[in-house]
Length: 438
Image 1 (tube, helix red, strand yellow):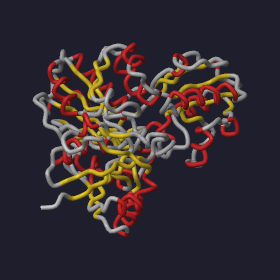
Image 2: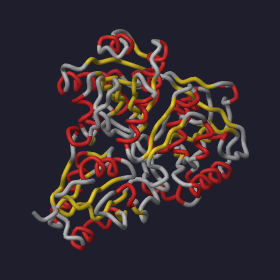
Image 3: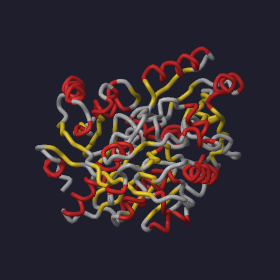
Image 4: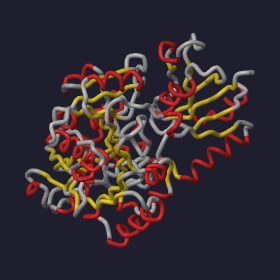
């Protein structure tokens, strides 16, 4: 039987895992290319032969997704496998239409073919959208496990934006490890809070190897998801975070709706900054689509030191990048803090440099905030230059990592922190006992 030629459409993460799980070693499948989208500057690389395995002596090229029609015809492609997240259902079908019109099949791979099985209990934290509150939820879960005496290791959704061969398996036990691995701001934002709390983090490209190494030093594994993707590892407890500030998105985005429907626990988050009608709408959708799920309401109370310094000041707010870009929010926690404590927001759009100027053009919904884009050394330098060029008295950093430790800023800064606060019962500790995680 002739092998089927395939392309995996991705954004530096899920597509490599899908290849490893479904295509690598598959005698019926030949992957001729990957395509890249969402993340700037990640096309033009190759998936290395060391990771691709037998049958790929030159590795696999990575092209820009805009070339998909040409690639289907050039390589006589049979199947195009969508392998990235946080897409409107309508956008998924537009991509499907492009692929079908070019003559190929449009494929979605599910948990059965892509989830690894662990020998240790696994708690998976996923979401319906980027920026819903996965990270503070993961930290809350880890705190409960630590208090219960369970040795916990985090496996983080991949962010391999550099040398894929060197990033195959990464272990972070100290903040210095991020420097050794040349982490981008996007990676530091996710790894640093866990590392600072004494939790070992694994990430990379080859999640079979990552999982087996993590199992050696963990009693419980926490999957800390990315975007609104579902877990790479089969969970014993599946937690999905929904966002009351974006009510209705839980049934409008791929694969966030999958997470919403499959979860054991749904956390309706940000109820403190959402209108009651939106909170109720998410609750109703949970009851309609996943009536067996345990539903928890939660908030993300904001904490900021020296908040009195904000009043009356011209404030530049720097927010988590993905939350504002493909996450779709115009503002985040930093803007909420600035407005709450009497600051005057300065719109940095006119002072954006290089690729950041392009980001504003691509995502016009972004408000008077600067997305902390840092997918490369060059982009980190552009972020620093944009901050320093913006005429403000103060910078409020609303990202999970303190950017002032990694960028040379010419103005004072304050950092916003936010942690998950459950409202009522049952709470996560009670649920984790029920599921025999603790």
